[in-house]
Length: 320
Image (cartoon, rainbow, N blue to C red; front, top):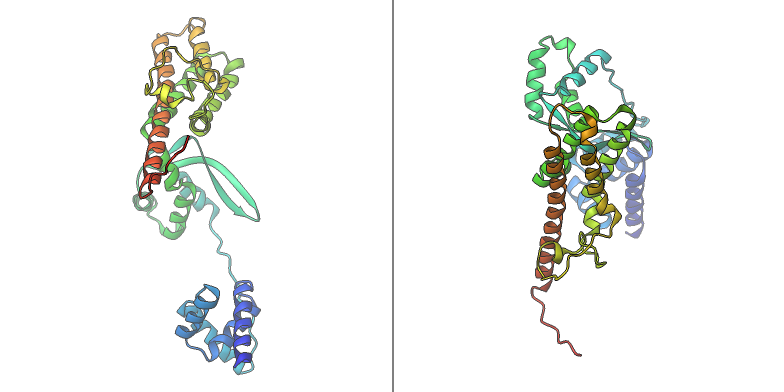
């Protein structure tokens, strides 16, 4: 009757809200599983709470009910913490991070959740070969089973230190990789090799700012109707006939080229053994190509969005 339905619902609420493994959760589950089949209980949970229960959990509930029925006490499950050999773990991490297996992604990071609202931000790393291939090489390199960590632990570490698929996919973008990342990595090397030590860090910080702006923020500038050449899609792509050349008002859009021009003007002071001028000018052009690609991407996205939103809709009349 209504009493049984009320009790059943309250037991479900208690089971779903209680902490995992707690006595309250197990007792509520035991009472529910005592006289209700897994199929019927699961159907009720789905209909009323949009939840479910596995067969294993239902069987555990039946076992707990037998304990209660026989007068025994339901106690909190004890969890064990497996201890690892610190030296074995450190050697495994060193092996995984070998340059033959992974590569660092410039200007990309990965956040690792440490629990208790704490986290660790590390440089992003992508794999050159699969985790299985890395494991096979690790196992061959350390044939003594006692000196290496388990396969499961090894895979956990590999997956933890590697980046997710969305970052890997972003880095695989040709323009981002070629015109921005590889390009500015070259500029960093030039700065470290030829700029005086006192000024190096200032220039390196500016390189980082340029990369973050062009990668993350420039797309938000595209399409602004403010008369700036770097924001005007039609002007940048030559879609309209402009009689005069539009200026670049935006300080942020100007800065990458101001920075490159500043480096170019200082080449003679560096006394380099190689002619860096063509290389620096080429790097400057690559930044312009990257910005151009972002404009084309924005135009393509807006064109697709416009055509999709217009499908299946009747043309509205407009009145003067």
